[in-house]
Length: 368
Ligand SMILES: CC(C)=CCC/C(C)=C/CC/C(C)=C/C=C/C(C)=C/C=C/C=C(C)/C=C/C=C(C)/C=C/C=C(C)/C=C/CC(C)(C)O
Ligand SMILES: C[S@@+](CC[C@H](N)C(=O)[O-])C[C@H]1O[C@@H](n2cnc3c(N)ncnc32)[C@H](O)[C@@H]1O
Image 1: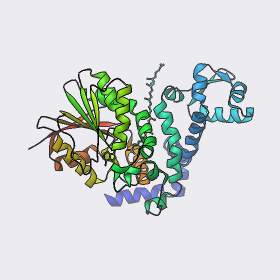
Image 2: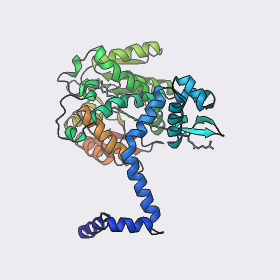
Image 3: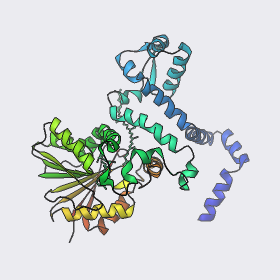
Image 4: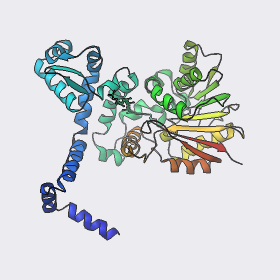
């Protein structure tokens, strides 16, 4: 079998075959599609920067109010007509914007999804840091980059004593996570509604956006959040300002070394496990197993690897994002299941989400 694949590879690598396949009517569409796919990989950074320019200039918000001519846009953005026209044309080609008649521009199918979505625009801005770190991907893979932007941004990933992190050190990442949480919470709570549960404990719950979303959707639910002390403090403030302080509390600690509070009948780990290598992930799962009673449920939600139709999200995007951060990787549902079994869980179930690209959802039950 391997010899057959090798023969195919040799054929594809032959310039004469490629030349023939691009000209022959039956293979031409495949050749065109592959060249376009490869071009998109070469140009991906340029496309991302067109998107970043639109986000920084608030172009989607501006055109959400009404369509405009290039001249109107140039005056609004404070740039030359020619520059505005260049940006508008690039954004149209990427379906971020669309032409409206002869000379006007409005939102395109992709740009319209960004309007009123502060979590997504915050991520686009945040990527400037990631792209700085990916400037030399080979050096990153070889471990030759001592201090990356992302390791500074996520200080818990390299900290010897994460529980000592201060308020200012956790502020930026906690705010980014809270801004991007609404999309995730909607997916998770639709895939696994919490109406059968009495008390949720959200471990690594950040500043409480997931708990707030769950509490407002399920009015009888009580909640406890566990996170690093400085982050738990931010969650307390949020619960107070959301009027949830009678139903939600926050406990500070280190889930890699401290026991988790008991008493909850559902314990969630939302975008937590993929931050950790297997030893850390296993330690967190074992702590969760200790904290849950025999009838409890563990709920894991995070982007997963090898998701059909979204393969590059887990292995390429999060693979390299977490490499730059300094720790962790996206796991397949099968890999998470194997860790769950080692930590003493069974009854593993996968719950379909509407947007598997954003998050997968798995539940499990403690097993004797
Ligand atoms: C009306 C007519 C005629 C037709 C209708 C056609 C139709 C059905 C249109 C659908 C319109 C629609 C509903 C569109 C919806 C679009 C959506 C929901 C788009 C969502 C996009 C989400 C994106 C791009 C998400 C990006 C997420 C990123 C980049 C996340 C990064 C996360 C990071 C960095 C997390 C870090 C945490 C750590 C450190 C890894 O633990
Ligand atoms: C990627 S964020 C996810 C936050 C939140 N669950 C969400 O999805 O928006 C990971 C969270 O784990 C917390 N964390 C990291 N290491 C921790 C540790 N050793 N003990 C407790 N919490 C920790 C971080 O402070 C952060 O809030």
